[in-house]
Image (cartoon, rainbow, N blue to C red; front, side, top):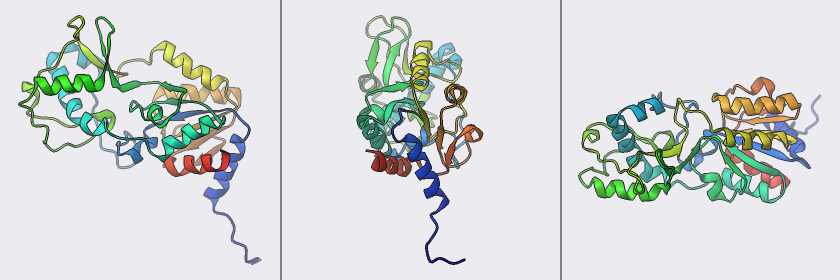
Length: 281
């Protein structure tokens, strides 16, 4: 029977359902690369993402040549990655936190954009690329200070070469590698490494415990912009599932958590998080 009243789109119905679950609840948020794509940072695994062979920590530690290759790409990539700014999705989560809806954000991203957007309770599962740590003495440096030293040590490197950005601030590099000079720790002379979890490394236990505690205390888990391929994210999803709290998944395309989601929104993170903040704060 034709009523003349247009039925709501399925996505609108699902969004309303998700907002209903979040209203009056403590919401823990788990974010992935899809939250930062609108800031110009490429996704690892989204549709159309390039095939990559990221450096493992074992390779990084084993060879000076490997470290030169890593820092050459990372140095060039930092020019664009380090200047990326928070987008409306990041700001929506900060607004939801200040409004008492979101109790904290666990992020698989290393871009620091949640902090810069104003979120105060952020657990960075895989570290942060704006910090560099000495593997010998543990001294921590601001990434920009190391970038400045790299530039001073390598005036011969053409910083205007074509940059093909990749996730985590890396780029493809070729002939500049052999000439690259990488700085050592100014405190002890040790090896410097970005304060991020490389492939082949584990999330530090204290960091994982912080993330797990956030999910344990939540009434709802919201996953945004993550395909949930990385095991650390799946483990947090399992905590919520075992506690039988509602799970909301917002991601373009399939995720490993779809079968466990109470609500799955096949949608972009920015517009969905913005709509949630508009409705709840």
